[in-house]
Image 1: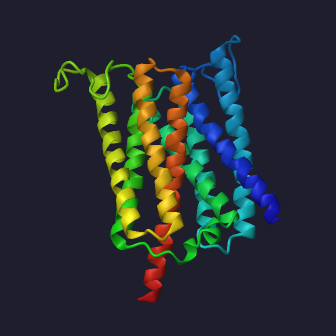
Image 2: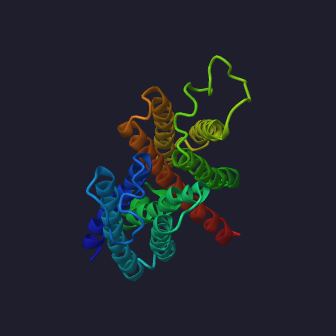
Image 3: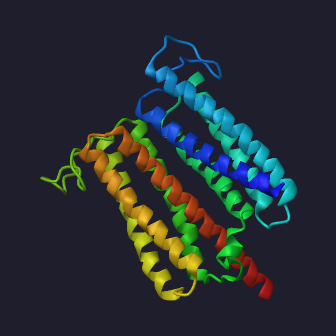
Length: 301
């Protein structure tokens, strides 16, 4: 059964990545109403928007079934692992929640500020599935993460950064939903000729707010890289893991700039969504390690 679980977890993780990228594609191509005001069925003349929206619904439906089966089997067969049951619940709960928000967006008009929550909710479900996959593959044992002790200060950094990244993701989704990806034609400032001008409309404020928030996330990630390299030089899971996270954050900033330079090239925009997805999944693995380290400390005391 564990062998089957391993295969199923990989399929579930890939499905969740497609759900996230598909959602970004729907937003980028303005295909949210491609099936008309109908859900779960699809009506309307055949068009690229209909195909994109219908494909996203089908992928989400398949992902829902796969994640549900994975959650049930994980609860049953690896439920003895400390985090397994919690992650099983979170993965299916947030997947259903994002589906309901998607349905509500089609059936009833929703504010862009509400719709922007959709990507972040899907991201949490993806992270839970990703962590279940790591537990099933016993990644902790392979990297000797079981015996890892993370100091309280670093744990606070990682907890805070995780919550903050969800905020950054929300601002990025809001940029897409209010169609302000090109509200600022320059980078890194809205207008490089007048970098400190505050005479901006709402779309530009949202765009620059996202850039500023992303800049803080970048600095925070790089700071933690040097801190971890200094404090955990002999821990492969810390050093290599956060090195990968830092590389992903650098790539995320580059793709963000390229979106402006390429006038929102669709492939670049989808890679932008993909990189933050992988980064967030890795960040959540560090949260899992922090949780175990805190539990170990409590047990010792």
